[in-house]
Length: 167
Image (cartoon, rainbow, N blue to C red; front, side, top):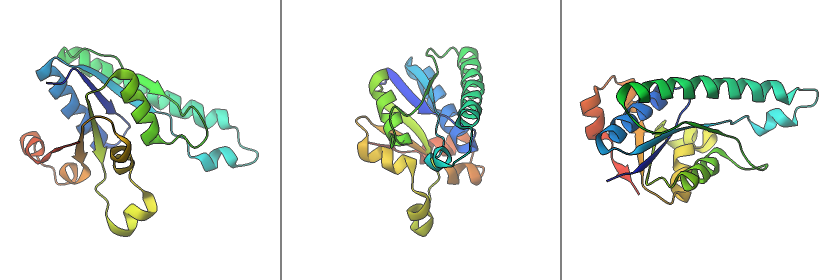
């Protein structure tokens, strides 16, 4: 079914649920799993005069190393093969969705499992949606795990029934 599953990770509860779903799916299908952490410092932080940009980058890298180490521990526990990856934008204007797409291409992912906040209306317009922007450029199927499922405390079985692959 799937041989390479990519899952972007961060420290949100919804990302944890997306990682759990991806890890379970990889275990069931024997797929390689790649947890992906994107170092995503806001561009405006780099434009601020008098700021030490290295401190911000170091903080993101530290968080990435911590999260990928935790992901690898869980993968090892469950017998899921694969290795985490930390990436950074390659050029100015390279946003998170493009970084995810580049990583999916490099990994030869045939599925990307990711979280979505499920925002709508003005909040989506103002804040944007990494998941939505990724779907517009994706070259493989994506499975979105909604924040609304995590907020309502749905159990894993019900969450799996509500999750729908989008290609």
